[in-house]
Length: 381
Image 1 (cartoon, one colour):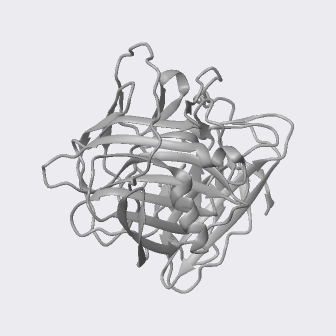
Image 2 (tube, rainbow, N blue to C red):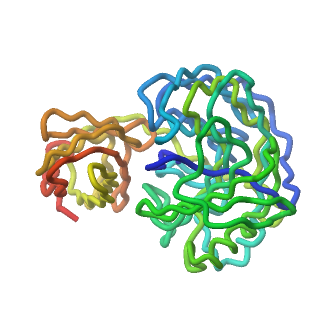
């Protein structure tokens, strides 16, 4: 979530399973402190990415990144427990909004024989300080092998633990035993399927095969074997406080082989030229009475890279943005300006990037029709 989105209450968590993943010893590195909203860094030579991902709150959260995980060192979240969480600090393998780890093999088709060999493990620490959170995996699937933007297939959440009155998205639809543990199964649809497996007996560590949960999702008709897995993430969704939450160790492997860090990790964009370029903008929304979410995809249809972008548009109705992810969104009246964040500043020729936001409306939630990227009018859709 993710930058995701959890348009509602919640999220996912942990699971059980059974393949031991091996993490090769790598040289020690100095810890990295991240306090920026969407700040991220790679660890273990690019094998994994750690992200702060404060997508649902305006307060500052800081994490300390180690070579094996991270810890939340500062957080003052205080959000209603019947709404969306404040953040999803997490570590992952794969691609999240065009920020990809090295050598994961993701995206990967579910029909690929290697999919059945994807295993992951995590060990976590939970503070005893009144924090309200869920500790969970967030595993994303899409009908296409996309590496950028919001996935539209399914979000598999595996909840290891949760506190307070928070619960998974949607409603409970059953129970299941997977990997020797009993799970409550929750389902909701928010433009994509959110399927959460909430462990009936909380745990601080887990080791499981991703396919064991996905098969259950397919059997329940919440997922399809024609889709692609795009990322495997583990972290926390805090509502209140969150200081002290920690991922001590995380691993991801395919058929017992960990991701090779020999491939270069995705570089952090540096901003750069703000010049215009040929572009196409696609606006996809999901709405309900009084509220909506939107995913905006910017495609570079020109012949040169866009290094730093600013997208301007106006709402035809009375919409008001309440929070955004993967962009900084400023609204004045009906006019909106969305600016890239650090990791998605560069859009290569033929490439695209996405951002999203959540908002309210009263009488008119019509979609925008005109977009300007760095001052240049884009094709709509």
